Amino acid sequence: MLRAMHPDAGTATLIEDLIELPTFHGIRDALVRAGAGAFRTMGLVCRDQAETIPDRIALRFEDEAVSFGAYNEGVNRFAHVLRRHGVRQGDVVNVMMENSPAMLMAQGACAKLGAIGALINTHLESAALHYVHRVSGARIALVDAACTPAMGVVLADPGDLVVLGDAGDERLPPALRSLPDELARAPISEPDLADVSIGDVFLYVYTSGTTGFPKPAIVRHLRFTAGGQSLAILLDETQDDCAYAPTPLYHGYANFVGFAPAFHRGACFASRRRFSARGFLDDIRRHRATIFCYVGELCRYLLRTPPDARDRDHGLRIATGSGLRPDIWRTFQERFGIPRIIDSYGQTEGNISLQNRRGRVGSCGRAQPFTHHLLKLARYDHAKGELVRDHDGFLVECRIGETGELLGKIDAQSTMAFDGYADRADNERKLVRDAFESGDLYLRTGDLLRKDYASYYYFVDRIGDTFRWKGENVATMEVEHLLNEAPGVHETAVYGVQVPGTDGRAGMALVVPEDGRAFDPDTFLAHACACLPAYARPLFVRVASHVDVTGNFKNRKTRLQEEGFRPGAVGGDPLFFRDDDQARLRPIDENLFAEIVSGRRL
Image 1 (spheres, rainbow, N blue to C red):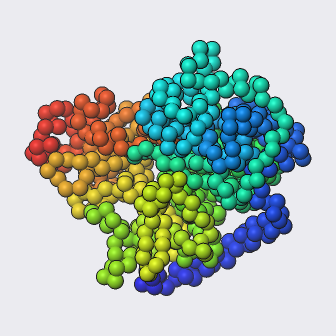
Image 2: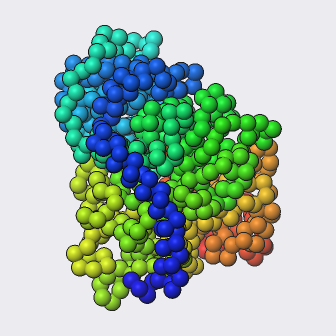
Image 3: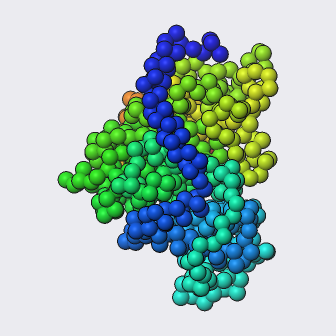
C-alpha cells in the first residue's frame, strides 16, 4: 500500500538490496555449480561423506569425537534396527533423545529409510508426553537412558507403540525393549536406501508448547538440505570449521543452523547434552569451534558469568542465531571479541526467513533482495485480539516504524514453501485470506515486528505476550529491554495479569537479581519511572532466582500469569505492589492483596 511508504524508504531498501545482491548471486552460483548433487537427501550425503572423508571428525559431544565413517556406521545400525521392526518409507519414528551422536544417528537412519523422524522434546512429561507420542502416528519410539524414566506414562498405555529404550542397570519394564541390545546386534553394513524425493517429509519438529500441547511442524528434506547448503555458503563454512550449538537438537535451530550446514560441508558439529554457561568457553576451546549458534536468552546467561582475562581467548569468528536482544548486543560482542554477528528470524513451520547479514544492531534481519513484497506488517487491534480491516474489507499495512503482525505471502513466487503442521486443522488457524486483495493468502506468524526504511525488521513481541493497560498497548519485550538495564538486575520477564474490577491486564515483572545482590525495590522503581511511561511500569513485581524457560530458552509466562500476584501462589517469592500514592514498591501480604482485589488500592 503506497500510503504506508515513506518517500525515502524505497531508495534505502534498494541501496541495501544492491549491497547484498552479490552475496545471493554467490549462493545461487555455488548451488548451480554443485548441480543436482547439492540437493541430495541426508541419507545419501551421509553415505557420500563416509566414502570420501571417513576419518574427518563429524561430531564432537563433550569428550566424545565421532568421524564421518563411524557416524555412518551408527546410522546404519539404527536403520537396521528400525527395518527389523517393520519401519518402511513414510512411517513415523518417535525420537526422544538428549543431544548426542546417537540422536543424530537415529535422525540419519530415518533419512536412509525414508521414514519421518518425530523429534520429541526431552523435557515433556505426563499428559503432554503421552500426547506427542500418540499424535505423531508412530508405531515405534527410540528413547535414550536420560529420557526412559519419563516414559512410564506412555508405557502404561502404549497401544500399538513399540518403545525401544535404555533402562541402564535397572530391570526393563515389561513394555520396554532394550535399545542398546538391539543396536549391539545390528550390522554396520549399508542398508538398502529408500527412493526418497527431496520434497518428501523428513522430520516432525514440535512447537515449544508454551501454551497447549505441542504441535508437529513438517520439515521436508528440501528445507534441511537446501537450507544447510545455503547457510554454509552465507557463513563461509569450510571443512576446517567447527560449529558449536549447545541448544536442543529436537528444536530446529541447533539442528538446521548448526548441524545441517556443517554436515553438508564436511565440517565438524559440536554440542553437549545440556547448555552450560560456565562450560561455554571450555567447550569452544576444546572443540576448536569457529562458529557459535545461539538462541533466545543464551547470550545473557553467558554475560552473567564472571568476566575473565581469557574471555577472548578462542577461535570464534562468527555468532549466528535468533533473539539477541539490543540491550546486550554490543556488550556481548565486545566482551567475547566475536568479529561478526548474524541475527535472524524464522519459524520451523513458516515460509519466512530474515537474516541480519550486515550486523545492524538490534535487527533480526531482512528478506532476500527484491523479495520484500512477499512480506507485510499488518495493523493489529490488541483490544479485539484481531487484525484490523479497513472500510474496503482488506487489512491495513503498517507505516514505517509502526508495529504490526508479520505476514508471509503464500503463492508460486514465495521464496520458501509453507509446509505447516501435520494436522491440517492447525494450518488453517495460521492463514488469513483476502488479506490485501481478493484471493490472496498469507501466513500469520503471531509475532509483532516493526520495519525501518531499509526494510530491516525488529522483533517487538509475541501477540499473546503484549497486553493492554490503561487504554495503552504494552509490548513486554520492549519493557524487558529497559528493565534489564536497572542496577543490580540480571534479567526480567514481563507479562500481563488480570486484576478484578479492571479492564485489560496490569503489568507484572519477574525480576532476577544479579548474583550476590539483593533486590532493591527503591532503585528498581526509580529506574522504571525514569525510562517507562506510567502505563508501562510494572504494577506488580515478583523476585525470583531464575526465569523458567523452555529447552530453547523461551520464557514460560503462562504459569506466571496464572499464579499472578497472590502471596500464597508464588512459592514464597517476594512480591511487591507499585503504590503510586506512597511512591514506592510495597511488599504484598494477604491484607494488601485483599485491598488490591477489592479495588481500594487501584
